Length: 405
Image (cartoon, rainbow, N blue to C red; front, side, top):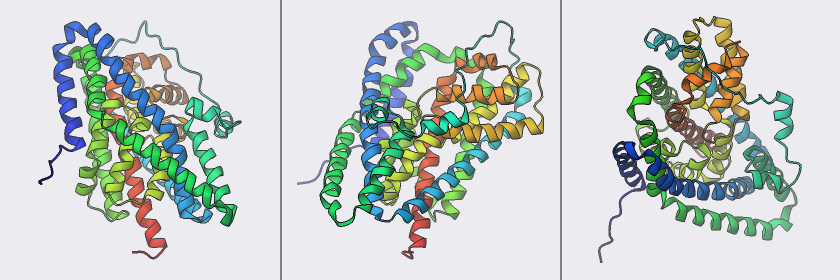
């Protein structure tokens, strides 16, 4: 009997994306209906993703560490990952600043009087450092604090390796639990097309073309920078260090890219990203460690957004940023990315920190706040693509180190 061919997840999500844009435009006069009766189903889907992400991160990192069976290998993978993330984030903010300066003359002149924006107080560096380490075992899981969950998984994983031969039953239990949550994730991911439609349709219905119109040039600049960074930095890195064709990389990443664009959540896209990197030939032990870490600390798209918005806000206030100020933005955005959670809207908090670091009025955020969701969709795509490129590169470097290639 011939097996029935099913449509790929990427194709299903893409169809849902196009349908959401068309439905959103048709429902513009009824935006309240879209927000009241369509958006809640999107929220349900996001809630299911948030529910599965915590156990997936906890158990997949533990399984990754256990399967490596060597604390030195974990250290080697961790160091390569963090160095790669910091380097690409610094590149991203430079791309954003160059793009912002190139298109500055085309930015709209928006009046800055009567602007108000209540910035969240930036967390001091030492507090961020302290907050990485959990004070109890339940709180990080309840609050979905990804950095604390990663630290918890590392400590438990190392302990399991160190107790030696007695750890067989624990390893079996953790592996089984990981399999259970992975199966649960597969079930939730089948709802992706519905989730994408219900998340995107109300955004289009509420914003429509008119809100984009006034800031079209700023949005276009950001998206050009997103594309340039992805096609130049990631393609070069994947080709030279990952030994992989960029065309193959982006083709296999398509389901995660489309989903990230619709959901605007790096953490929410994590389950799909795990599947995509597996198809790219990345060992599960590597992707289980690198991707959750990336969803938490790797914010290349957000860094580009900082650069473009900083230039735009400065131009609205008639301020020309100096080279030292731009260098400060590069440093602040790179370091701030580590403490920013991969959830929708986190970029606004980072932008407040960047503006404050160079003395720009934080109220300027109000200029871009209306279209932040549209910025967010593109920057999330860049964030998750960067995570996957790191997976491919670290996987190959580790195989080289072990003499497997």
